[in-house]
Length: 327
Image (cartoon, rainbow, N blue to C red; front, side, top):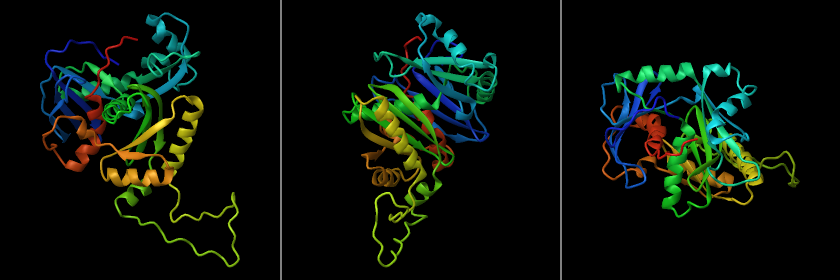
């Protein structure tokens, strides 16, 4: 969503978000899609100083917006937003007059008997707070973006690099507080879901929580399928359970697009997290490094390195934004 419109004056792009009272930011140079974008500066800072750029993009916190899916109304393209406002009235807990809406087709321009829309509903007060809070870095926010499309950008770029652009691929962003799942094909967003965090999975990946020994079986025990006994060496990950449920929904909804791969995005221990998920889920899962999307030789982050990467992952995805389509 663009809020408000303003022309770009240079190839530099500033991405920013508020993260726990601090400013996370990414400054890039270069047009996404033409060549690897250069990462000029990035980090997590307490006191922000102005950063000149041709375009400034602010990222909303997931708590400040909802992404809803509705049937595409039978109206002209230019009336989609107005029609969507009426469709979501019963799906939100606030007056729709207090919301800024944007829409995009599920799966982009793919043709189906019944097309659907993603409707992004953001609180006006949250957008104002975000743009006001960005004043330390820039005096002009030209675009407000969301995490789902940012993660889609990272996934689409990696899928193209792996020759999987035409296949359906998924990415899960794993954070301490919440996880975000997206499924894309042909650079388009088809499915998204927010999932509760799984601290135990991250602890196992960091080696802080070892898998327990297999329990001793009682004499004469004979396993019967469907029984209550869990014979694994570790409790099943709640995240993996929810990922499997999402995959089941996907396969029923889009049987013609089976998932080719799952990418795990984590600020720490990415390969170990991916290995754990693959072992428990049974789907090819690999780690996705968000910094690999940019030209080699990127600078070190400003502020604590681990905290900066965790705060900047969605900004790195938003930096790859290429939307030009008008909805």
